[in-house]
Amino acid sequence: MVNQNLTATEIGFTHEDFAALLDKYDYHFSPGDIVPGTVFSIEPRGALIDIGAKTAAYIPIQEMSINRVDAPEEVLQSNETREFFILTDENEDGQLTLSIRRIEYMRAWERVRQLQAEDATVRSGVFATNRGGALVRIEGLRGFIPGSHISTRKPKEELVGEELPLKFLEVDEERNRLVLSHRRALVERKMNRLEVGEVVIGTVRGIKPYGAFIDIGGVSGLLHISEISHEHIDTPHSVFNVNDEVKVMIIDLDAERGRISLSTKQLEPEPGDMIKNRDLVYDKAEEMAAKYREQMLAKQQGITLTPTEAEEVVGAEEAVEATTEEEIPVVTETQEEVSAETTDVVETPAATEEISAVVEATSAATVTEEEIPAAVEQEG
Image (cartoon, rainbow, N blue to C red; front, side, top):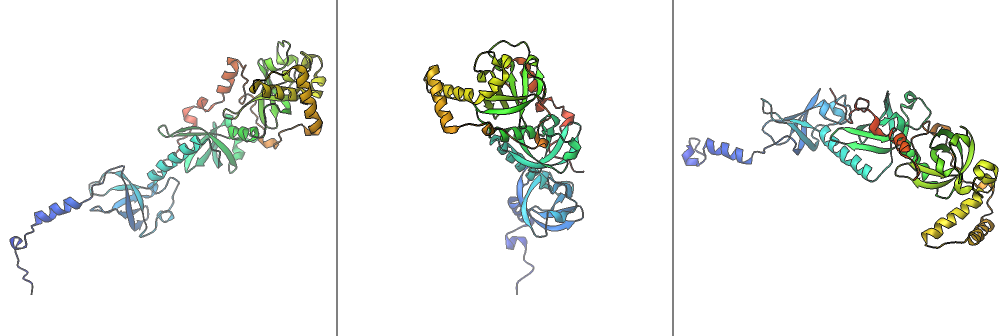
């Protein structure tokens, strides 16, 4: 029988030794650490988690997800093991406070930064609107679409519940700002169908002193005043009226900035024909565009074509393609996708500082701080 009256000296192990041993192997937890833990008790507004500390840690319901949670069982199950973020130091009872929401938050920002770096297009449904624009969720984060970047004729209030393609304008975790553009996503998608040197039919939607904005199937392109005719023009109003149907050639596509530059000057058989005989310009548009494309190709290859050689090339193209009026490429989209904003898309290389001001006026930077909600909602 074991002698139960053995002294500490006989055992060689005192209470002080035992306490020191506990301290030696005790885990030290700090706010910001991510640790594994096991759920062993679910309560009405939270849960107790075993993370190996002396006292069970606690996770309140508002820290269980980046999204709203009404009951702990929506996120956690008894005996489930997963990662937790240590939110605060031990309280007076020696209990740590944990968070899952903070882990999701960090990983969500990492993911949207990656998507922005890849220039990805994402889709998300509008869940609310305010005076400045619309609200969506991306990777659980709350994103904001400024009104100038919503390309639809619908009132903002009618967008709730509608899924939109979006591009990233601003991803700033430090300022908790996630700003997106519906307009840029639509422009990029439509621009992928267009080519430099292509002739398209469009409608004049707006006229400014520096040029005319042409709607080509939902994409707004700029016909700069310097690209209307080889002859001098005092104002685009002397050539075009709003709602005029025009035939233009694409001379530049900037998908990254969502800008399209157009020209009728390059389609003139003779200098000044856009002023003197517009119908002739439109009749000869495909022929002149073919010459333009060939000259651009020759320029890239360092070859100079004579006018006769250029005409021979065009004749060969016409014999092969037999281009007809019905074959003129026209970008088509539903009317709902046509942008109501005609001044925030395009700019030619020859554009003036005034154009830059117009474009910048529609950027996300003009949206006030109070109009851009924080990317993550604070649950009460």
